[in-house]
Image (cartoon, rainbow, N blue to C red):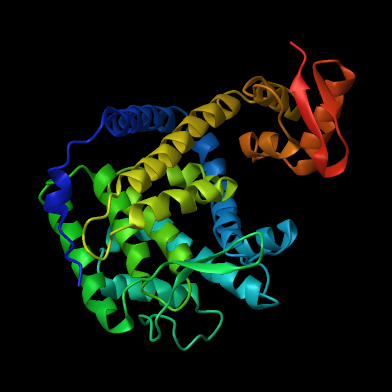
Length: 348
């Protein structure tokens, strides 16, 4: 079985791109702390919106979907899940909620990971919930011509419990002893978790929940205000490419985790920069029109209604649509295309 050894990783000579990402994240995290002291109540609005976006996006990556209205009802716990997809969404809501509320009281151990997995499937009555896999799983891809290829074979079921214990023990050791930068240790842990693929179902969603948990425990709270899952979902091909590039040679211990580390750090940094943009939108009380106008000024080239919605999550879709119409009528932006192909661009 592969040996999980973070001491080998810490001896790496990291390139300037990776070190630059880490430095930039620390800089943005410091600015976020300052912003939170200035406008804590206004920024609290972003928390519930980020929870909704995270739950919706992380499930959508796995093809688990429902309507926008139902997502919001489920997130507010004001409705009973109607079908399997909604039960899976409700489970994700529950796990994300407990991570938000109690991350500092959730140690990184196999037992706690199994408990979180059980909660993820708590609305389904799945007998495999909270247990490591019982059958061999495979990471496959279906190509445009219809054929399917196995890209990676995770650990066998009998190897999984010990491997899960070992990545937790190694992670806790290097973090506890300050042996490795957390922003390197976290992506490596998630990468190893995905290569082990410890569950029959829910591995991708668990990896994203664990990413949030590990970041919070190390003092990086951007996921509380900006959905990391939504960023991953928007460019999920880059996520899968980075993961695939890092998996080669994993079983033999000759893999290179750098592509996945850089991908995850780039996603975290992009979320921090989004946070700064959204802070600018909420730091002064503005009308919906003024908020959308300011949001368009952050966009270069073509943008869509969804792009503006991501910057103005506190506004309803009807408010955004009405504001965009007014900006078009005023000549401040131009609209082209129809229906789902509609896009806008600034005229100045």
